Length: 426
Image (tube, rainbow, N blue to C red; front, side, top):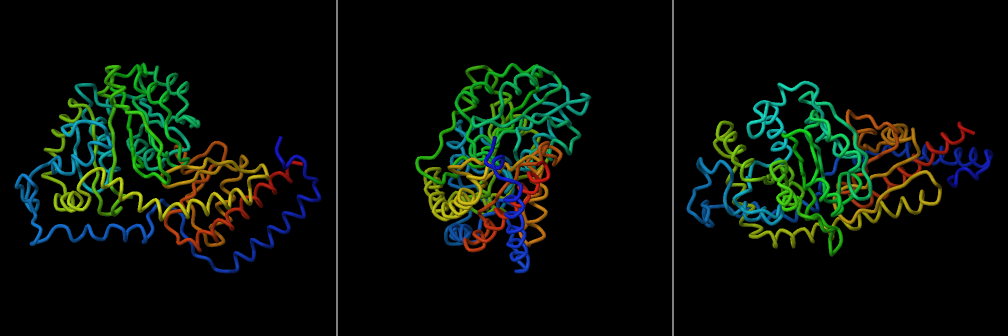
């Protein structure tokens, strides 16, 4: 039972009429607000402008080992950036590869490698019919799109407050055609959930039937805390080592939301055996990534600790924006029984679940009133939310005044759609 079940039909109809009037007022404003993706705002980008001045004739272009970053070489990245990323992954520096600006690119390349060539001597996925990949949902649409691109069947796994539903994961992993799972383990996209220790341990000890099962561990928000102390994430790689499953763990991260999204630095980490295979593939694929950009980042941040301190500046910018979103939801929807959400302690999103069958229509109304949101269903495989209820809110890009307007309109649209659905069912 929800609060709506106790509202008489006449009161529902009156409230719907009031909301329709308010919605038309918003619509008449000609708003043009963008909350479609989790992009840093200009005030965040300004925090890192000093990075651009780090590499020049005065400061030099060479790594500490004397490698001229303007020239070819170091296919797997400069040592200074490996040392900054290694503590994030909690592995030895030798297990880190530093690439270009996009961790998503590195994920795509890894899947392409396993698909075309196989992993550690296993049969290429391209030569195995009917393979599948597990997709904890709601989740990151671009992850799902990579495996969909290769024709791999996507299997929806429910998200819980502790991470993926591990009972479901264990059941599906007993099928040798299931080849892996996508994970955003810290402040997950979009719900802001951090995997529990128990979830991490169950992933590390997973009895997967496929010898080439991979855990795509995208720790995109590993230091993106809104509050101190931040959430803690158990080290999956060390747990996997204890279970002799370390070759299935492949971890990714980047500075995309730490420095500049279009000009950051990405990295991956894995077991020595997997890293050796990736390095071999890279030797055919490229001469090197942008080492000048790596050096800029290494000089600007200096250490992993300094990079974490830099993220406190981001948190100071983002906390008021997340507060606007959560306050609007609490003030306008909390007592009405039409929506639920998690209050994240980090990351870039707030995921909202409306009444079943209401997400798509809510997004349509928002778009018509000038607020661009992530399409309904985007957080599920194939862009299809089976319950049509999940909406991802990205509060980071708009200025605070625009965000307040967008969230007030969001609450109007969500309530209007849900009440209409309830009235139709009476």
